[in-house]
Length: 206
Ligand SMILES: *[C@@H]1O[C@H](CO)[C@@H](O)[C@H](O)[C@H]1NC(C)=O
Ligand SMILES: *[C@@H]1O[C@H](CO)[C@@H](O)[C@H](O)[C@H]1NC(C)=O
Ligand SMILES: *[C@@H]1O[C@H](CO)[C@@H](O)[C@H](O)[C@H]1NC(C)=O
Ligand SMILES: *[C@@H]1O[C@H](CO)[C@@H](O)[C@H](O)[C@H]1NC(C)=O
Image 1 (cartoon, helix red, strand yellow):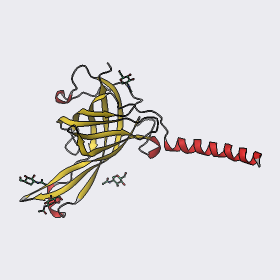
Image 2 (cartoon, helix red, strand yellow):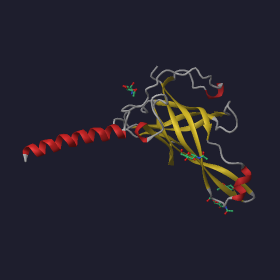
Image 3 (tube, helix red, strand yellow):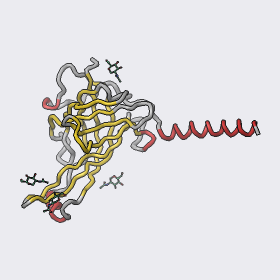
Image 4 (spheres, protein in one colour):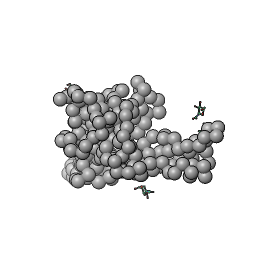
């Protein structure tokens, strides 16, 4: 009985280890710590005194709602739902590589709602920001704008704990459907627009 128990325990440990590897290929957030040489439009540059910490690759949707209000009809941004990985070269946009979730807070925190939150057990941090400036994508109007957002709240311990600014760079896709389509949908219709992007994180740890 004792031998059976030991054997079972070992098998169980092996299984749990394998499961853990499946759940998280990465046990840290932010493995790319060198700022790419992508030129940044001046209006979304971060102020001096803030330094590049790391970047993450994002994949998900921008969710829009067709809203009719009086005589005006428009797509209004509800928020993103995206997952982030450390490195597109060594990982894929599949759950085993995902290290963080990007979404909006329902209730703003100090005027910010744009959130990036760790989803790995080694890191409990999240950062909430607000939009400061944007610049149209240089790759065409089928791509959502590049953004500068500024932190309004840091919570938990980990990669996002000291982040002061987050940029959205090299966005692909994610735009709302043509305005004309909004009229053909019922008021309140939600539309999820796929996108990929890079998020660049800055801190004052220079
Ligand atoms: C359209 O939907 C929005 C959001 O649900 C609501 O606030 C608005 O009153 C609706 N407009 C009409 C004309 O029903
Ligand atoms: C509808 O339009 C009115 C007047 O322009 C504005 O005050 C109100 O906030 C709008 N409501 C929505 C849900 O956008
Ligand atoms: C955040 O800043 C504090 C104080 O400078 C430092 O001790 C800590 O290591 C930093 N955390 C990260 C993840 O860089
Ligand atoms: C959006 O992405 C999902 C998941 O990868 C995919 O199944 C779907 O076909 C994409 N939609 C469009 C319009 O490209």
